[in-house]
Amino acid sequence: MPERVVQAMSQPLIDHRGPQFAALLSKVTSGLKEIFKTVGGRILLFPGSGTGAWECCIVNTLSPGEKVLGCVNGHFSDLFCKTATAHGIDVERLEVEYGAGVPAERIEERLRRDRDRHIKAVLLVQTETSTGVTSDLAEIRKAIDAVSHPALLLADVVSSLGCSDLRFDDWKVDVALTAPQKGLMLPPGMALLAASERALEANRSAKCARSFWDWRPVLESNAAGYFPYTPATALLFGLSESLKILSEEGLENVFHRHARLAEACRRAVTAMRLNLFAKNSAQYSNTLTAVAMPEGLDSDTFIDHTLKLVDLPLGKGLGKVKGKLFRIGHLGSLNELEILGVLAGIEMALESFGVKIPLGAGLAAAESYLLETAKKRSPL
Ligand code: PLP
Figure 1 (cartoon, rainbow, N blue to C red):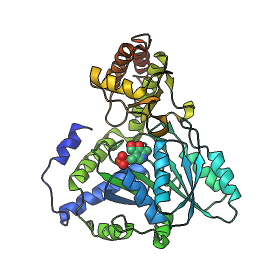
Figure 2 (figure 1 turned 60 degrees about the vertical axis):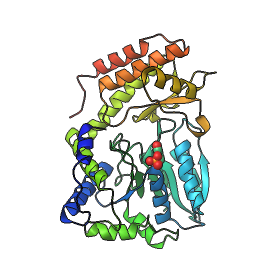
Figure 3 (figure 1 turned 45 degrees about the vertical axis):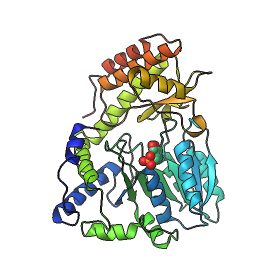
Figure 4 (figure 1 turned 60 degrees about the horizontal axis):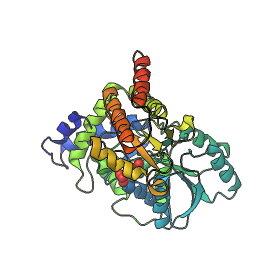
């Protein structure tokens, strides 16, 4: 999280029903539209988190008893689907091996068989933070179009927005939902969504019970420059600043920086003779790298060891992959020296944990890649 964001959040609060607030809301909304790459989509902001954004998406677009196709390729997509089930949605789970991306052809095949158009929506997570895999949303859109199926495309972009490309309009996403604590470089505490015209139409007939999460009163109040409740103003100050930072760097440059640091990290992991958990190089996430723990070792114990040794918090394996992997985050405001520090810490921790690695090889691989690509640091 950049210091500028911390500073912005520390400024004195303003009246959330006054003219200054209306200007802040308008700035934040138009900045987010650029990040989501949408002109016609509506931005909806709530106090909450990514988990709240799942619920917000579901209760506003669906009715109990309706069928959806839920793509499950990791812990977060599993929870997204379970949120829908909790609201009485009939979720048909399209189970995908953890470590793989959501296969567009399987979605196409399933929708092709849905002749009576019972499936109302396709649910998926663009970047599965539990496995370090990014699915190809553009291909998934093509698959839905290939069979001219009217299902809504409801996508969790929690750990992809602001880290890798998302084209809300071009890919005809109907709801893209996120949280601020990843690519947007803020503290947690919000649920952010973009909704298409079709999603707003679905909202008008959706029967799931909702009150706080209801889009309608929010859109009505937003039109007048405020919210129907007390908003998280300090977070909106922070968001306004982080959008400014992203725009100064340029979104495509931000993606390029993430791609470069992520590739350095992957090369380092391979040079440490460890295996990436993601199966297919075309689906490697530029947000984080999941590393398979060597056979016979527990990754939770290794993560505790790393924290004690070098004060480096690695991500744990979640759900089905608990104890089997550790995750290196390389998102947000990160630079070369920071990722090199992380990689050095991991090498020290592995060595002292008893994993036989060529000490320094990972760091050397990352350094040479960063040097090799230093001249073309950004497309500008
Ligand atoms: N979706 C994805 C892809 C996530 O990575 C996370 C959290 O890391 C969530 C949803 C849940 O978000 P939150 O923890 O803000 O509720």
